[in-house]
Image 1 (cartoon, rainbow, N blue to C red):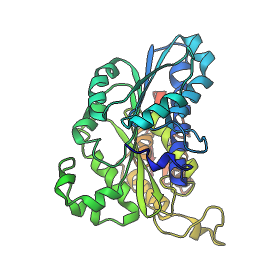
Image 2: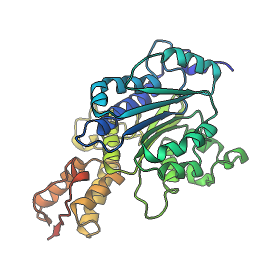
Image 3: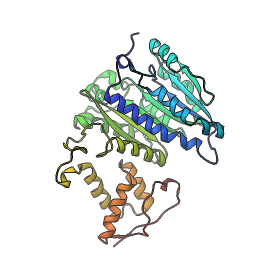
Image 4: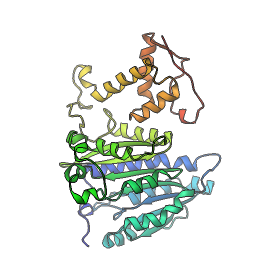
Length: 360
């Protein structure tokens, strides 16, 4: 099989964005398990199911080397905590696989690297049982859309301490939703995708995946849309822990300071953070206004009444605790609410706070 064009030239800006988000999040994720007084998980597994060659033509790191370098940067802490880290790298294309082996040829006692030249479904089914008693990070950099079906998605979200990052070609949903081949993998109505703006297609794809989450189960998904040429791709992040979703959203808002979800003007508002308009009201994205109005209504109608509920509402809307604090401060200044002065903090996920808000 021929080598993918992706590795014959430098990574394009969209691929670079994807890899940078992966790197930034993994750099936040891994220390949680090795920098702590009491080690809870003795084994950490990292899975890269579509690993590619490991780097591009100019030597820029792909996902396998991003994982390796991040793990090595914490070597002294890993050795001190005596945590075992296993990095699983799978690549189906034989030529890519052989190049990958050369690019990751390292000897480091802080990492155990296992490599595979297998199709995704068979290797996932084989490795899935090992994920049930370890902390896991799963990366699915799939070429297309067909691999992460409803059945497989549900198997992923049932795992305990597991975060995943999925890269998906969201444009395919719009392009092929009515074809029989597509419907083998996704039971999705064509209108569900087509009724939305093309720039918003990845938002709709994430909504579709959210519909797979069983009712009553606490699970968090967040998107980041990536435009490459005329096509829309995207990342979907998933976790069962508020700390995970908070860390991922922080990374997204660093990449997109205006809306926290795309490497392009997703709402076509012609706002540019580097060259703002003269008047502030024109520099404010509609998404932010909608969030603040919605949150204000939720508070004043007493639909969210505690600090913890506000925190969860904020994360589910794709915003950060500082955004909700801004609303709380304004409502308090207007004397519409009262609370004990304790604002939402980044440590709320591990604090037992159930402070309620009083509505004047």
